Image (cartoon, rainbow, N blue to C red; front, side, top):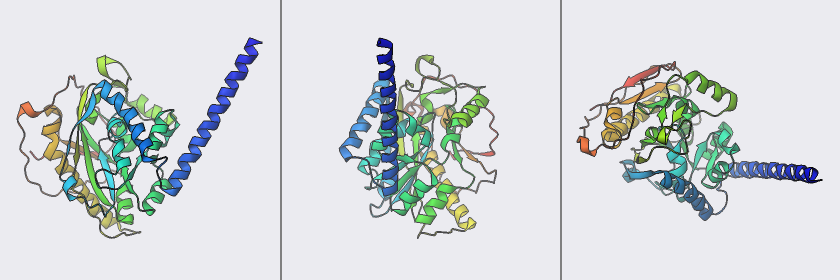
Length: 350
């Protein structure tokens, strides 16, 4: 009798959870369709505090925030926030910065962050993401939100960049079609480059297991390189090394009036301007915010379609700060792993 009761309870619990998951899915889809937040703003703030309290506990915090972009933003305009790097887990966007979307920082307008669909399958994570304006990064959802006049945030390298993340080399990966550039031009959204310095330094990559990481991504949809975290714990992403994150906002790249069918020349032109703005942002703050040995390697740019990278605009040389101003972290960097993605090294102009 006890066994039957236990079985019934388990089945009832499973049915209740399945019903909850379906309700959650429909709630997210409806919010994406209508282009609105889920729940009142205070719920988003509460969800962020829940996530950020864990980040504080393990010693990962936002140490500073600055950048030319903060002085150049127009509250009357909307922006496509493009952030780099993705990092091993996109820790900072989720645990530290997600409240910015809810309260409309930095340009005074609420915005929505585009998130891998697989993350909305995770309990607790999905609920937090929904409340802090996380939305599915699918073409129909992105286009619908943009068409409704919303500001968005996107990480162009996505899961591919996550798979290739290293703690000893900063890199930015761009998709073959440059969809984020086309989106910005189509809807007249100025591009706002954003760099999260030390996002890559929270964990250490384990060399030699790249093929297995790619297989896991193809099989499950989750992209995660093999890592060690604090105390040398393997694959323990929720316990990263204590890290100071430095958020830097670059100057916005103006795309002009909306153009529903931009020419390839126009797309490449805006991409060139964006790369120049991103490179300037990295060069200006790398030695101030990164470990010196990482900053010295510069920013590696990878374009997945194999096309040559457009030349970046000339910039003023950036002087290295004194060594005492450079944060450090305990590390034993492994050698740079080969990647089959066509790439090109753009050295820092220092």
